[in-house]
Figure (cartoon, helix red, strand yellow):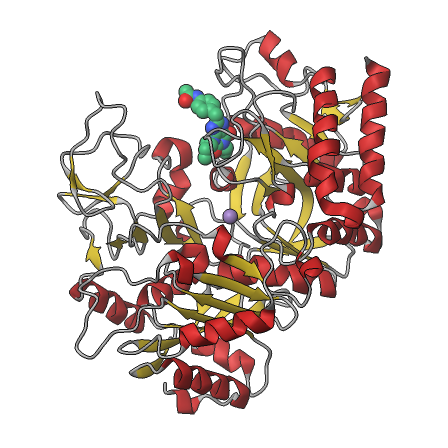
Length: 609
Ligand code: TSX
Ligand code: MN
């Protein structure tokens, strides 16, 4: 298919205008065919950008190494370019949209010289789902085309759906490394220096302009940029929710199923939870999605969620058959690995894969690396943010209905964070607004000394959306309250829970075994939705009675008591921290309902003391 075959006049003009600016050698449309995927993979291997893995170990899979400077999302180069700074709010980088477009237009001018411009028509969500959205990404990165083909639904079928005048979110992307006459990358990952990188969002015009990075969330624009930052704005304006949440299905021994979403800050094991294998006999957990949930009210008054993605872009280090069997199986074939180590027999390896490196490997910096377990300071072979890009359908845990265009009805929403103290294993909110309060105070302990922040303090990441909300976070809290008010029937709203798998004892040992044992908590959540859970009312919310959750092996009665106790002094310190350091950030945009909950929580705690 040729660009001249595009029947959507506005789309065609938009493509040709960008081509005129960026001056690529040619324009190619990603048609979504496996033949094109294979052709592009073969060219990437031939040109030395990636290596083909051993077909007996990882069939139809490749391993890329990025430039060492281009290994993660760049939050300090990520912008919300709304007309006013106020609209972006205190937690986003704001930049003037007019000035930014001038700067970036200059960067894009000639930026695709010597390269091909790929047109990627993609759907976030099952094609034609009433909750799905269409985007078109223009990019000069074949790596982006290949990853988008796994992570989203790409191709001419999306163009067919767009017809002659359908709506799409326009997404520009260039790696920002034009090639001079006769110049080649020589297999090196192309990108621009940090000071030229821009990951820009224009919430009023719903545009995404990305320049200078080829990596993950900076470049695969359907994911964080469209499905979270731009979608959060659309959701606010259209009355739905675009959230940084996993979606799972839980089925009881009696065969009753419920669907649960969950928002967790990074490094809490969200992907692991989405694919958990329950230890509780007779219970089943299946996966709908591991990162993003779009939720809309159905005609029956319930909230229905879709996973807008089609793949997993998961962190590889720490992923093993023990920690996440289903992710390992999903990434067994048809997978793109980025910044992992490659073994002599062309398999991938990373720290925490569950076994020692089988001999020397080529590390993510392309150097030979021999594991030395006596050297605690040895640099890792895989970058800590190394990834696998794998089709979601390949997870053995994927639920049959994961692509149902109407979505799945949500019974429960989980929030969580890494909290060594204070926050119990699980508690439930009294109602929707109290649940919004819980979402607004989400945070994790700081484990590595980053910049100016102290180890041991709490980094707040409300709703795990701090890096992903396309507008003022205070208004976002208000939007959640508004969604609750908009419900036709309050009893049909999901129940809201706060979970914490990360309590530690005085020797810093984890006291909850986590992973598959979390199914015991999911069972209690399920029962709370049924109205059959054993509960107690506490100053912080509704909690399991001490015998409501069966103790896993190795957890003592005293530890269970600790996990399910309300630490009054700890929570009073929490209240003070929220009052002094967290809520003031949102100024007069903080919904008054939330400060009322904070006051109430404090009063409850003082009354219980
Ligand atoms: O993903 C995790 N989950 C959720 C699983 C469904 N992790 C890994 C976090 C980093 C991404 C966890 N780590 C969990 C957890 O529930 N809990 C812990 C803490 C922990 C780590 C090790 C052990 C117990 C708890 N035990 C042993 O290693 C033997
Ligand atoms: Mn995420």
